[in-house]
Length: 206
Image (tube, rainbow, N blue to C red; front, side, top):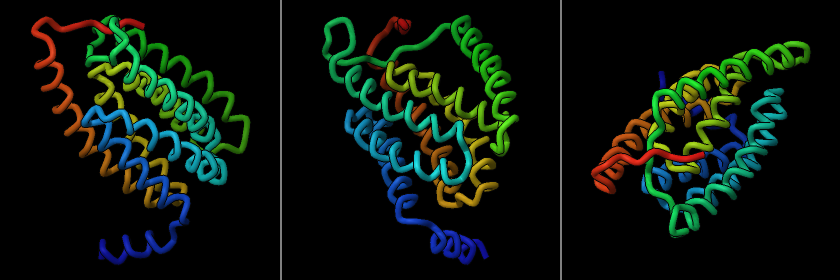
């Protein structure tokens, strides 16, 4: 029974993982609404996941949490004081050419870090590296309110579900399954907001 399996998984979860999952859900729910408090939830959740992933020997994911914590501070600053008038950012888009450049960079860095991690005791070095590198760019896109961040996250989180299940992080895998639903909701919400904010689409700047 699915309910029995879920109950068993929940019983096996540690308090830090439960707290991290709860804060991660809060982060995404608040981000969908463009609520700046999402970055506070992200900051605390990142520190909790840092310990969890290091214990699971997902070293690239562990390092990613340090980056997430820094981006939580950056994201809060940009959402609060960014933009031409320093009154906060509006949703923007990137050109296909910029996306092509970003994707090529992600693949190149994945090959490099994957090769390096393959010489350690890391599990799934290339998959772990891909989700880590791609998440770095996607997180930056959220901080800059780039609409297409939701598409990147859908790919990343789909792969992450397998990664976490393989390491026994069942509640986190369940969280990422929920994320896939919320990502679709988030994209639709940001798309409507982007269309409403400007008749002429804006292009984000690095």
